[in-house]
Amino acid sequence: MVIKMSETRLVALSIILLLLASISPVLPRTFSSGVSNGDYFVYHMYGVYNSTLPNIELLIPEFERNITDWTQISIESVYGSLVTQTYILHFKNGSELRFNFETDVDPQKQGEFQMSNKGVPLCAAYLNVGDKIPTVNITISGIVERNYSDGERELIYANWNQPDEYGEIYFDRETGMLVELERTCRFVNPVSERVVEKTDVLNLIDTNRWHLR
Image (tube, rainbow, N blue to C red; front, side):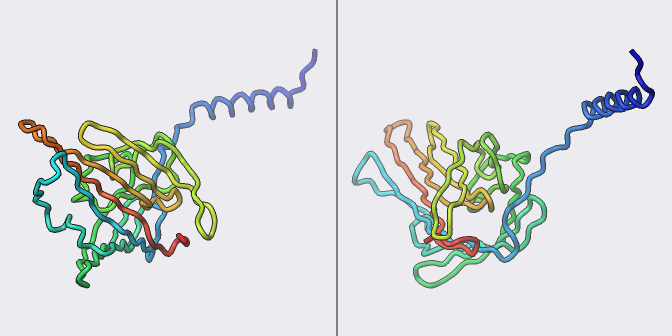
């Protein structure tokens, strides 16, 4: 059998290309936000308290007394995975409180979640099942579709059930913004075994990115 020189070179070149492909470094996955400067998201949020003792008096902090009418998050800047936001808390008496906030949505920068210093949780755009959400320290369980007035949108969700906390959370997959949150924290007195549960509920009610109704 006679193999021409050009055919030999072609076979050798193919082998070299395969070898190069097999040793090419795998680039690390990058994460970025799906929001843009000028986007806004308005939420209705409230808390519900329950106790095993029906007539118990609870000392509830002022900021958790359901005195907020609505909360708006305005996106001020986006740089990679870092999102700068302005919060507007509009209270039922007509007064408002404004403050700025920064969130890193990179799951590789996972940290311990504290609602008091991370604000409304948000995540990177187009996360998949198994990805982590750094602002709530949980892993995505699934992807669902929800119908809105201007079409369907993909939502990612997660749920958790721990001895002192359980809940469920939904994010818009394109923007990474929170859509729904219901989280219940259980406080147990080890002496009296009295149980107090506080449920935080957050629902997106308006945004410039899509029509909710």
